[in-house]
Amino acid sequence: MKFFIDTANIEEIKEANSMGMADGVTTNPTLIAREKGDFEDIIKEICKIVDGPISAEVISLDTEGMLKEARHLASIHKNIVVKLPMTIDGIKATRQLSKEGIKINVTLIFSPLQALMAAKAGATYVSPFIGRLDDISNEGILLVEQIVEIFNNYAFDTEVIVASVRNPLHVLDAALMGADIATIPFKVLSKFASHPLTDKGIKAFLDDWNKANK
Ligand code: G3P
Image (cartoon, rainbow, N blue to C red):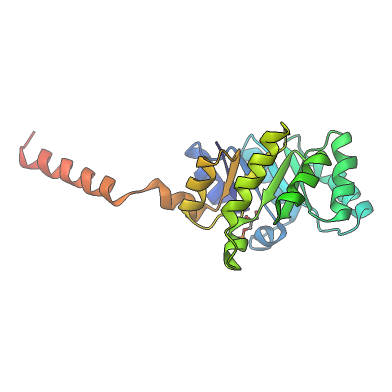
């Protein structure tokens, strides 16, 4: 399973990368807005740190605007994946850009049929947002289960990026379902790196060692 880091924060990306946990990075306009500096400069900096797919999202809502923005973003670096919203315009742009060899991550996926449509249009990735479904009392992880099953049924190459991950259990469930990728906020990654029994065990070993005066 690949871990992407869901942030535009350079320090977090560097830290996750030094742990070997950043197979890629996903950003969105909200994550970029949280950071200081120009959008393209931030994306270029991320591309220098992580050698893997780096998602950068367009803000246009019409197909023509998306095509223009996407071609420009893709020209910044070979690892750029263009994020397009799951709309009819986004699907048309996905179809065209995929033919041009530009990798597309169709984002804001909330139903299995949206994912199927994006895969048929040639998307390299789809991003189901599971936390936001949980927020409205729909079990987000069930969406992942259905998408994985559909893609397996028809041997689609499109990879599933589990997004809007809010806690370690989201990652565990996604891994058990065979999702290709989870894009994880750094805070969540740090949570499942540690365990109280690990800390307790380390302390007990050191205490015993010191008591024995080795
Ligand atoms: O990459 C976008 C996605 O992960 C957003 O998450 O927490 O804003 O729903 P969230």
